[in-house]
Image 1: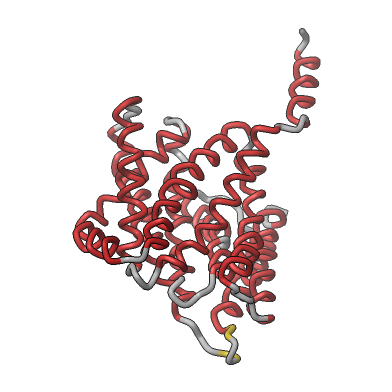
Image 2: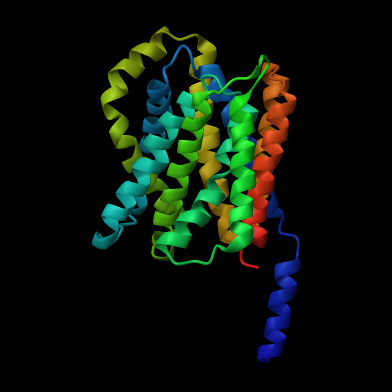
Length: 301
């Protein structure tokens, strides 16, 4: 077969509908969107640190089983990078997000978290020398303007919620971790990197294990079921289906589907918890996502 024919076949295959990839994306969106709602249910009986510990130490134990069986070892030069990414992506991210969701509803929280690509693009500009451009700064301003509206939106009018800043900090941690992970994904399978991150990232939460066990024992049954749901579905299965999607699609194409997480989280929050977004908060959420789209689509033009 000639090179031209091979290229034509490859292009045709890329254009075909991939049912497995689509199913993996749908499962990922549903589970990750629902996690924002379940976090809200678990907070109160559990502190933000206890909830992070219950979720990610258990997920780290699952990851350990995978690592013991398959033994995908990182290179020595990658250990420090992997450790920093893990602590930021798991321990720091989880505690900041949980703290923020004490007062910020599930939908707005998910919109703030989805500003992560803006932070990633900003960091890549300075750390990797990637071009940002005029549209990148415009998109950043629009996105952060939307986050500001979410932060001051309340049923009582304008009132700054500092916990929205905590969630923005979680998005920043996720962005830094994503930039740090980028070279690792070229040397290890995505699932192996995820497993190492879950295991190493849970280590800073170990001191909270005794208090977490006591809190879980005293918590209502729905909280314990909520924690189990977070461990199994958004974390273990959600990360796995995301790895499947990344394997079958380009990273850029797969990431674009994640813009569906905030509206789905908002819908689940409304149906499950009766969380009705304020008009100001809804406008802020739309601006936050619009800014992310501008950064990713227009910034290199």
